[in-house]
Image (tube, rainbow, N blue to C red; front, side, top):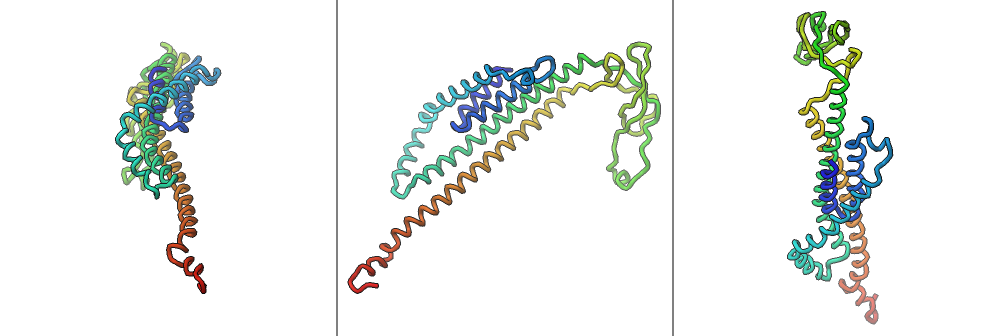
Length: 280
C-alpha cells in the first residue's frame, strides 16, 4: 500500500504547481499514516506520526515536480513559441501573463483534485477492510430465531402512500456458545412470521457484535468518500482560481485607468490645445 500512495504522490506532485506540493504531501501522508497504517487496531498517527514516511512522500513529490518541468517544456515547445509571440505584443502586460498562467493551472489543479480524491478513497477502503477483518476475528455468525411476528405499525398517511419502513426490529433468540441461550432484537423485513431464521453476529460472550461490512459496501463507501473529497478539493481550487482572477482583473483595470489618465489628454488633443498660445 505504501507503493500505491507513493505513486499517487508522484502523479499529483508532477501535475501540481509548486505552491500545491505541501498540500499533496500532507494529504497523501495523512491518508496513509492516519488510515492505512494500524497499530493494535488504532490509526498509526495515534502511536506517533511517521516522519520518515512524510519525508519519503515529500521527496517523491518534489522529484516528480522537478522531472516534470523538462518534460513539459519539451512537449509544449510549439505552444511556448506561440505564447512568446503573443507576449511580444507591447499591449501584453505582466497581469496578462499571470492570467494566462492561471488559466493553464486550472486543468492541472482539477487533475490534482482527482488524484488526491483517489488517495482518500484508497485510505477509506483500507481502513474499512481492516475494521471488517477485526470484526470477523472477534465476531461469530450464528442463526437466530424470531420470537414474534414482524407486524407493521398502525397505518399512517406516509405508510399509506408507500413511504413506510420496509424493515422492523423484533425479539429473537440464539445460542452461543452451544447450549447458552441469549435473547435480543434483530432487524427483519415487515410481515415476517415468528420463527424466521436470520443470521446475526455475536462476540465471544454471545452478545450482539458489529456486522463486518461486505466488499461491495466497502467499495461503495470508498468511492463515495473519494468522489466527495475530489469535489470539495475541486471546488476549493475553483474558488481560489476565481479569487486570483478577480484580483488580477481589478489590478489590470486600475492599471488601464492610470495609463488612460496619462494618455487621454494627448490622444484627445486637449493637452495640446491647453499648451498652445491662447489655449484654455
